[in-house]
Image (cartoon, rainbow, N blue to C red):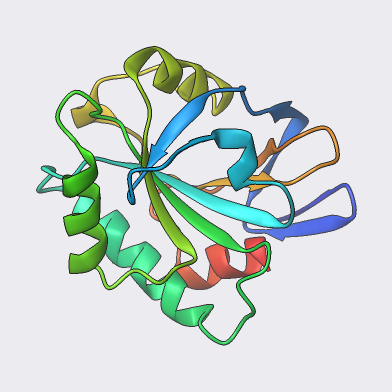
Length: 172
């Protein structure tokens, strides 16, 4: 499936019509810095996955998926291409948990793990059209964001458990 979105084709990704502006929320990065989510996506494209660090089923698979995407993108300049893992269990996942999770997956600098307070997470999930806020029932899809002049927008979503090449192609 190939759907064109603006000037960018997104292979194997369903385009969001119209693109949805990401909320203006503050998130905490794996290094402890608190930044506006919109600052993370100022240009280029970003692949986003939902996860939580104590998960023993879907999340290790999603982490492995992003690890393969990260490896596939290793030769690309970091520039505007990013991977973001958002914990859906902010009540339990702390910065040190995100650090450990990234270390176990050998994440590069282009791969960011973040947490948001529950109220802000609900806003993020609503923008991604995710209504289920139960950590154990989160999605196994990957969301594509794109930096735009008026702020980042949610522009596309993959099917469940996409292939690494599909994600890499969508954000190149």
